[in-house]
Length: 310
Image 1: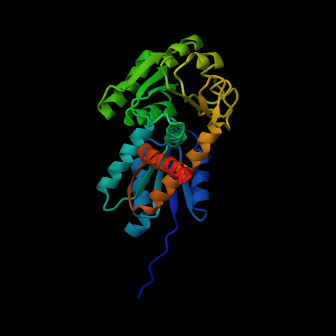
Image 2: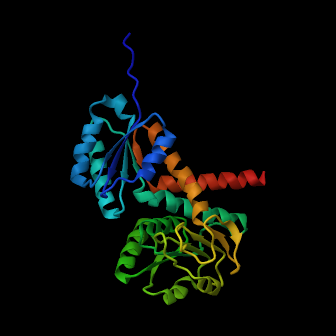
Image 3: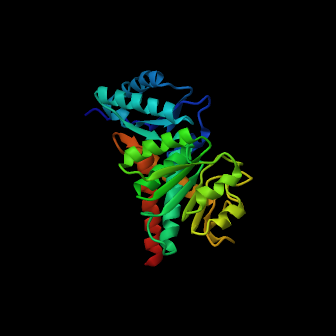
């Protein structure tokens, strides 16, 4: 009897940016030390079709199950084009494989941030996210709009901030259409003093801006009298929330709110991304995106809470 070939796990990275991110490649290698990585940069939807078909066919249906596509990039629209082209290839080919999507870590970071705020809310007796007033600062960025989408799916009332009203409204309209309800609103913030209006009714605040930019001052946080939880994804000084340390994890702040820092979120983010990669590698095919990322993060948080109560 002929021996079945043994296939090595291969990750094919399709990145829409000039440089393929080493972050995600390192997470994949740590999850599967014996795997191989092929990377392609400046990838368009048209490029993706050629690359994906070339990745599907040489190893046959069994080998294709060990060939995983990881789609990355900082531009959500371009990433969406590559995802759509890749899915079209899978649908038209005689067999397919799994697709992992985590554009510059936005999906796993947002999932980790929302899951951490949910966990802290439950731990402190504030309840679930449903009906909570949430403000996502820098809500049109990759992490911000993904977090807003997840909060809205949990039936929270979400305010996102944007430097331009039109851009913010476009993001809000898209999310509201997806969740089938008017759950996301926009507040234009073009200067720091406008932030207080965006957070005045917030029970949860997430600073989702780029590294090295402070979005929320200690004074603005203190003025947000209803705020119970504040979280920040920025680990590069100056941090996104004044007075909130990057390692803080449920720490009581001077404002009275409990804080979650970027590195505390980052620990869960890595676990989420690693589990996404493991699930995609075990599955013959499927799309592993922000919804799967949040499913993983939420389950991990709820399991941790249940264990603490046992």
